[in-house]
Amino acid sequence: HKAKPRRERPPNIPHALAVDPSRLVCVVGEANAYPRRGKDLPPDELVQWVARRVGTGETLDIALRPRNPLASWTTTQIGLPEKEILEGKTMDELRAAWRSFSREGDVICAWGHYSPWLFGREGFDLSPDLVDIRDTAKRVSREKVGAIDEFFARLFPTREAPHPIARGRAGRRLTFLSSLAAHFAELGRSTKGRSATAPPGP
Image 1 (tube, rainbow, N blue to C red):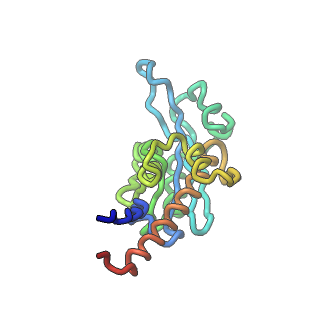
Image 2 (image 1 turned 180 degrees about the vertical axis):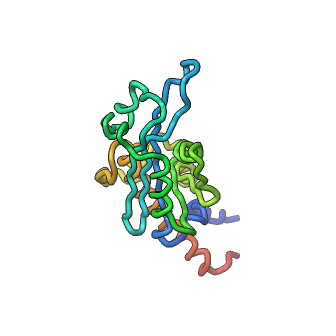
Image 3 (image 1 turned 30 degrees about the horizontal axis):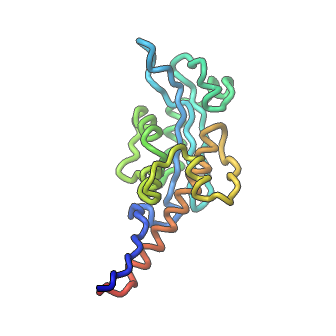
């Protein structure tokens, strides 16, 4: 018996990504967060929300005024000056900006669950059109992915890190996220096309 050649499995890309890039919106949220070991401390609250429409380059970058005192390390962690945070927008202003930015039929892309969870705590609902790009990266690479910048460097070892498209750490993460979402979306569309035209197997 001759062993049959093993067929290469197509990349495991969520069907939701195989859409027009103008419908893909990447999001990152940053928090004013206290150490969890402390007692009676305020919960994490959203203090920056950034979004990028992959197909058009439209970008939303909003700093939000915290309702609680800033944790001592918040400005260092998220890379925004204290003044920008304390003089940020209100949650009502974010709601208005998000309504203007988002469109019906958008597919929201995030790295993990934390950013959508932060947004959800403020009364926003990103489901059901939400794709976890970190989970997609795990399924495609079939390995642990680590931080988003580390995974990007492994996936594209010869490519320079892209220039941040928004402020602070969120801006850097949004840049990596947008590139990965575009890459996986292209893989999804090409796989979908091959599956639609490929002849049936023996």
